[in-house]
Image (cartoon, rainbow over all chains, first blue to last red; front, top):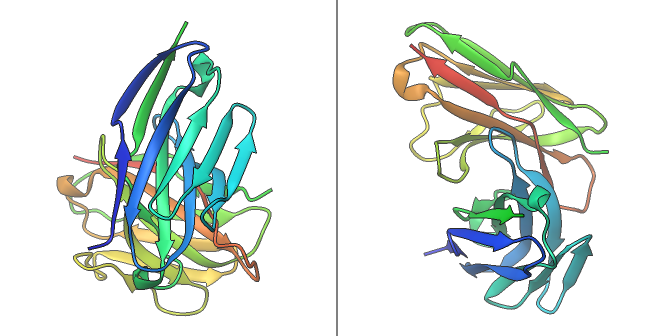
Length: 112
Length: 117
């Protein structure tokens, strides 16, 4: 069965304390893996797309990496404004067309 | 670039009434738009895929007669919740994929909070 699992469910960091969020997937024929940031009461904001194992993308304090079974979102020296829920989604052949399957997200809180 | 808007941002209605939510791509044309529903502390659940000029494709378990979707142009899709009931209260989010783009990225709107009394 196609699945996307994110861990941890929640993460509390001190400002400047680097960490990683995990997204593991079991899908047939990955077409792309997407990371989004969602603030409370708002729609997801696009961060990265990764298409093949070994690929890496960076944006400010965030870096996304991809292997054949999982993706990591590394947060370097986070700030309180990085607090949000981070969602991972996969697009896969058996999903049909352009559909995305989302994980349940990691709720990140960065404290001073 | 890639801005998607939704209107209204929140709506309160009485049980039995219908509510229409608009989703617009502001700076790009979208051949495909998607409608999601999100319950508190849960992830996004796809309700339907909407292609411009054709009928929407609904996910299993989503009633097409209750959630009417129209995608009349490359920049506008609407979701109408017909005869709304309290259990339809949720956060509805649309997304759009750029026309003619080799990228598969979906860009999301800000969401519409629906409360049915």
